[in-house]
Length: 232
Image (cartoon, rainbow, N blue to C red):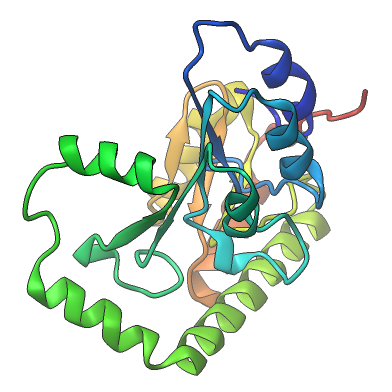
């Protein structure tokens, strides 16, 4: 897994003439980390213009204003950038599977040629249009969730655990080899989490009771957490 701080080094250095498409997830899933302002722009500028850069911004709405580069704005200057966004997260339409792509017309034309037909239902489209008519509702939802997320991260820190700052609707606990033990503690507490063996655990932010149960389960774990080292 490439760390966000390695974007302009490890990934760019790995470019070969055989690479035709690069995928950048910002904020990243599952680590919840966000590229700092300027990092994505510098990376895009360094990649050859004949390489398509697909930027997945599914969790973009959970990042504070100015907290990272806006890939849609970058796309206006770089036709080899394609941006993917979704209504499944901040807009609360996960079950309807509505999303969109912002890209150069040539890229969109190629995508349409291979896309499955009739993937977007009429109810899903109607729901997406309706939620766009209620922007303040989305803003309030995001504010509530990010406030709950930040409290959860603070409580985990207070418990002596080191976790990355999150720019998403979930937190990442880098338990490493102890991930299975933490999963056991969560299962006993009735908490569903997603485990990445030998890497860590991704936990979607819940209500206050659920978040408290997560902190209690983390306290019961016998292994301390350590964040990934992004130092040079």
